[in-house]
Length: 88
Image (cartoon, rainbow, N blue to C red; front, side, top):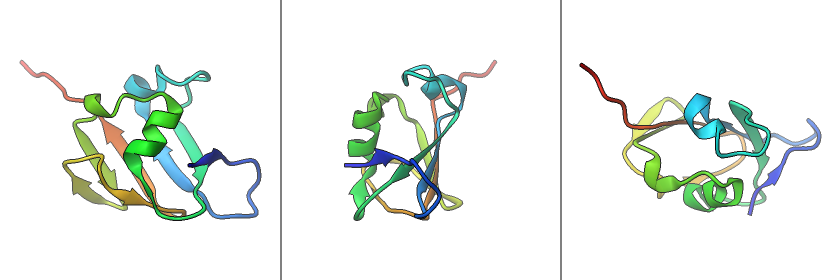
């Protein structure tokens, strides 16, 4: 599916994991850049990165809020993931 970006020759999808989801990746980066050869389900990319899609509460893709990880993403997209939060 997606491969970690190795150079800036190609535009990449930028994925914000924040503190919570960065924990699941080997290098704990908050931002990940992924080269995607064709539109790909976000759930497939998350699975490849080791991020549990079931724990994603909100997806913001290109400044649009989505309620599901079951969406197509491609290069040039900026995607942010947010876990559920509790208040009090």
